[in-house]
Length: 219
Image 1: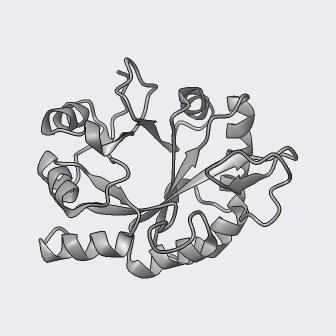
Image 2: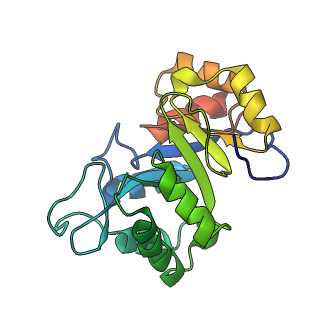
């Protein structure tokens, strides 16, 4: 497993990422959901990016065959969130031309001066390889629901929460990577993630997770 040196593992404050904004309480991947996550106090917003036929980056979990009319663009998201003290976990959905996808995304990131506030995650490791080659300063995360034999050079891993154990978290930390599991919505599973030592949790209702963590002194 390739790794990137990220320095010391954060303290026991658990960071919260709103899944597709806050899909448990607002329409997913919408500006409304992103604004809700900001107001709730989330540390980051996780969202899905796809490329349209006319080379626009729009926010959608599913492929978009047309021009993406009616969907928020990546520019829309950056403009909405520019004043907010929040980071973005940009999940790049699989795309045939990984290099082209990465060039488009980097253009939008540069135009809005968002490089320090974004991380790019993907289950398509070709995209992570392309991002590493073109912009190694952008934080990258390997997303998976079964443990891969190998990952590209990444700063964090984003496993499905059922794969998380204290041993797997310790191994990732020893390799210099953070652990950000998805999508964790049950308090019993939040307890298990905290006990395993994860660094952040992706949840459908960031406000509920923040309240739960605050009650336990983890915020």
